[in-house]
Length: 157
Image (cartoon, rainbow, N blue to C red; front, top):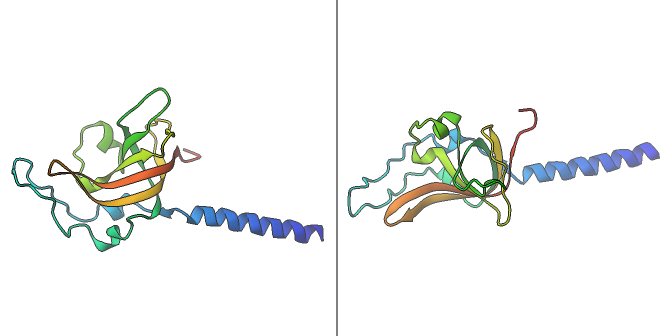
């Protein structure tokens, strides 16, 4: 009887762990950046966002809970950590000035009151994903945004 109870507890715990893991859909940067996105000319006074350039497969991720791994470029580093950062696929794109296409990075904002530990290592970020051109003063400022529940270095790295 004890073995059966242990097995039932294990199955319930495993099901709960699977459900929690399934709450975040894994997304790779290769899926987000495998199309051409050309920004409007910044010197054109009537510059508008291009239309219908984000593929339907990427648009379908809007509002989904995702997990994505990349490298952070902090936008507000303090001793307590980072609450806003850019996440992209390659360390080279962050720190060494290589040009980054608009669809190769995600603007990450940690949930209110939380901060992530800054690291130069690959970081897995989990949260609600937003897809679409964000405009300011007639200019596209981002394609992808994520409100993060958690951002942490993967174990074993």
